[in-house]
Length: 395
Image 1 (cartoon, rainbow, N blue to C red):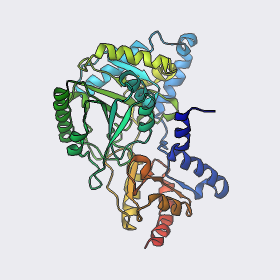
Image 2 (image 1 turned 180 degrees about the vertical axis):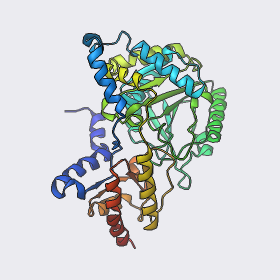
Image 3 (image 1 turned 135 degrees about the vertical axis):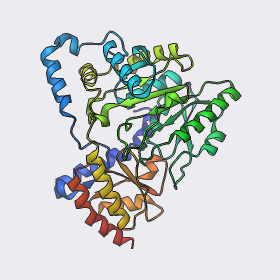
Image 4 (image 1 turned 90 degrees about the vertical axis):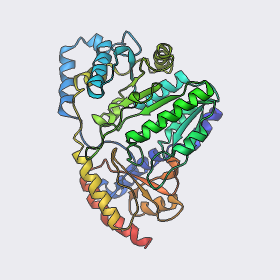
């Protein structure tokens, strides 16, 4: 008999994964070229060639025992952490050192580590809808409570007035995700400054520490010169979670890091807690080979022009067919308004044309669907006639 908590989680398992598995099933029946699977944010762009070279060089040149062994610290190799810190300092004018970096098992592992380090049962974590649905499970893992800020479906920017009213003495953390999954919006500097001012005010009012957790797997995927603010510069109690899943197209390698600045409240204990959490959650340390790989590839980037072409083609194609959506500034998702109130009904209708979409209720925003356009360009082009048939069904 499984636990009561897991019974609920199994019953409400990821709609994204369910659609992805459905896509695999349909591909076996109709052929992969005839199934338009927009469910999973799985990069279609290959990793930079430098990644392959780094892996080969490391395997040929490094001591295999050391390369594949445990790291001396649960936080990861010190030289890797120092290199990450120096790269961030050069890019954003920060002042981090190796001690401020904890290498993690992707961004998801990093979020679980920092929430484990911070949360007591009943602590509240604020999220801005629409948001990555797994945040609910990550917070629940440590008996925290998710508090949702309702979506602004005109701009999909944070509703700061509502945010201010929902901060309470129990608020322990706030999670932001920019560029955002599922909308692709980027929170501008002005918004971040206002958010920081609200949180500073509430910390003084309640005499508490409220941490801003910046979930940044899509930081490098911003289009048209859009600047993504680096949040530690605006609010002292900021923790950054990063992943190389999208920036280097390495989602299956599970490698990322946390940044815990010295300026954060109780930073020394928080850093120690993150390292212990890495161990006791069963990660032990981030994958050792991949730590060395990212150190060698810190200046490499995935060519996002592939995603940008997909973005333009799909956005313009859907708009011409009468669908409503805002143009994403980053990430690789379109968040499209369903032509009927029940977006799950719309997802079911789309499946008749072998189009797989994810319902917006999975992201705390019913009435919309998410389309992941990190697919082959041919998939985008070939899907548009099917979208046309789907649009005609709803006139």
